[in-house]
Length: 382
Image (cartoon, rainbow, N blue to C red; front, side):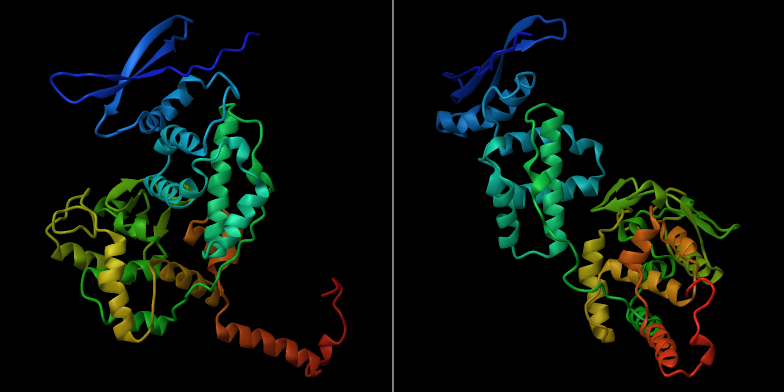
């Protein structure tokens, strides 16, 4: 099989008497039928890119796409690979994922590795880089995972045969235990909030919804006869999209007391149509959760004397209260809409102090021989 030659193309400066001089890139484009045609495209003006080197950096992603069928013809930079990854992979993902990936790539990976070729990145060097960052362990794990995903994209497009991130070690774990509020603390917070923020927090605490799901609620999602709500979408920074996972798109029961609070909110609002947002802004658009958190929830929490909180604090608190109520673990998973029980147990649920003390007292009672029947093991060895 004959290997195609690497196509560098031709970059020239084109003089224009009527307007600014521009950089023009000429190349050959091959059709699926195998015919080659000469093409050209304007890169930008000379004012934008004063030197030929500046213009060459801009056309590198285009060169990459032109030579996808030519494996290893020349070193491909991480920056060019990331451009291709963003173009091909991100459009099909959730908006919040697009924002997160783009931010991580531009803030962390591109500045450090953008000018390196794919073959120049070594596992130990990446490990040392991650170790030098003053970030939480979980954030470093996310950095490693995204870098690994970018290299897998390169392998899928046959731009490299290796993924050095496979050998990069990065321990996970949280820097601190997630905050969990007691029922009393939630009531103190609610007392400091006006509408619609009072009902927002009530929904978060009573249903354990994610912030994006709360912002994405529409009146048509509620069935008042069956007292259920169907989680259909999430809204991030004003943009509506799919929920986090397929398991998230499930109906949830609504207690009659919470339903009455929501119906009272519906009566007071001017936006009562089925497709109107439950917590719409004055313009009728979904609100921004981060703006609400910083301008309303956290100041209210400080006034209530309960310290710093986040939107996910209510989800963690809901999970912990379910466990405190002795809820079956499978029911907990269904209410939290987790894909796996492990997420429910390992990430969200914490034993409250009274449960810990009670369990510890049982063990101490056994050791102090307060119950003679516990001296002998049972038939199953427990």
